[in-house]
Image (cartoon, rainbow, N blue to C red; front, side):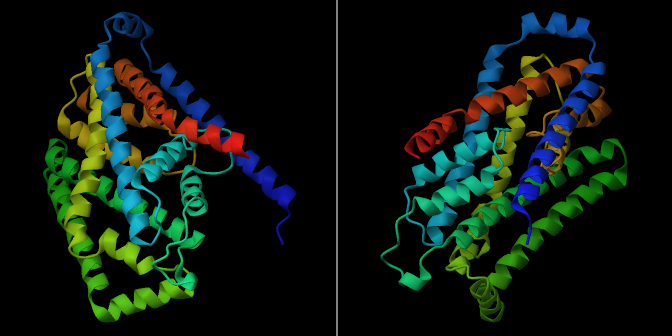
Length: 327
């Protein structure tokens, strides 16, 4: 058995390593800044664009919360949709680096399970359990990953020709392959034989009603609207960063953002920094630098984006405070 004391120390060490990596990457980014450019740019920041960034980030996360809520309800959880949106924002705030060992996704799954009443329409042995809650979070994440990847492939198709003809063609091929892959997943869920295999596998894992959640997320004809919604959600995120660039008077080509923002989103999945701080700044400088954008202003816009992201999730603090006071 794993010693709980050793496990706690490993978690703390891992958290401190993430902090250290973020600080080192931020320090690296700061060495690239021309501080005279920053001094000139700060008084001219256009705050109306930052408000637009806040709106697009809120819209992106609210839409994601509603999608996750519908997946949860498809699996038998019966909390109101607004509750799932609130849990989503609280989980997002936790993912910004609050001092906790509980990740935002885990918080979402556990909170939704603990606060959901038993579904009277289902037999007791088929009531939604915690495993289903985590499975549904994974389904939501899979749709998000698909939408982000397709958006990145579109960006590569539009902008890859700047670097090489075959790179642009590769982007469109990847886009078609991913859409076809989504169709294949939908077909497998639709066919009786493969559907039964999936259902048996979920039953062995004790994931009650997992097939219903799977059908809602990836089944036919739901996938026809799920994939465009997933792409749209990540386009909102892209538009939010575009707002920060515009606030700093940086005119970035749309293809640069279509390539850069999805790539950064994938990198930020890696648990090597605190909410992407440092990793986001250094990576964006490398990617957007290919379009010869001002390095200092790109870093400034990235820092503003990180701060506005934190502000976006602040409503989730209320739910966390209420929960703490009730325990």
